[in-house]
Length: 212
Image (cartoon, rainbow, N blue to C red; front, side, top):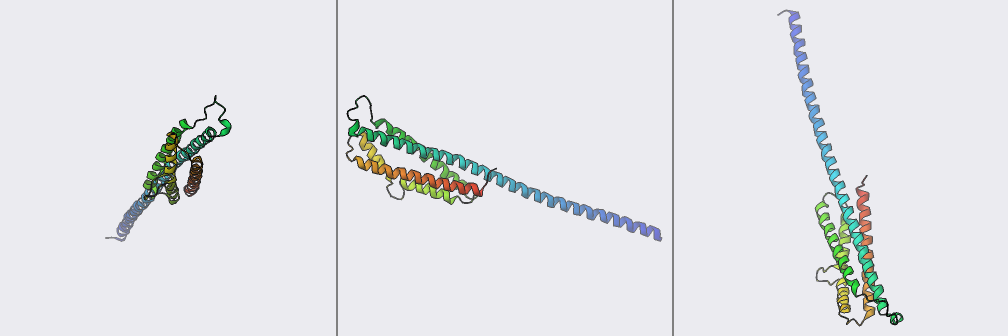
């Protein structure tokens, strides 16, 4: 084989080898790019899901704060009319009915709505706690609600005392009016405390998972 033919074969072989190396390198780069793209997609999907979780939690949080406010207002309306009903200053005003009897149902309706909203939040937090940081604050707020409004670990909450007094009032046998005032004062303080705890928890959640 002459020298020129040998040089041609060598150059051709180098060219083919070069192309093979380039193809292998290109395939490798494509694979790397695909892996990075897939990883980016996973991150984006995860972040998108996180944002959706936060948005849903905010929606439930708004429902909870509305329900807390409704319960507070319903209780205040009842106690205000109860006070007028039993005030000696209004005994002579026969044309106005100050009875608080028809204001008990709105209290119970507001309480039932609040319980439903708290249950929704509790379920949602259980489902999303692995994806969202700082959900313990919300769990603590839920526990604060349960301590005052839900029968837990054989401990009777103040809400049951209040309900017992409302039933007694409805039967027109309530004698200790001051006790009703005192228990409502405790419950209204609990409502304000639970609302404050939820606000602080949501501030932390939003700060950690900023929504744009």
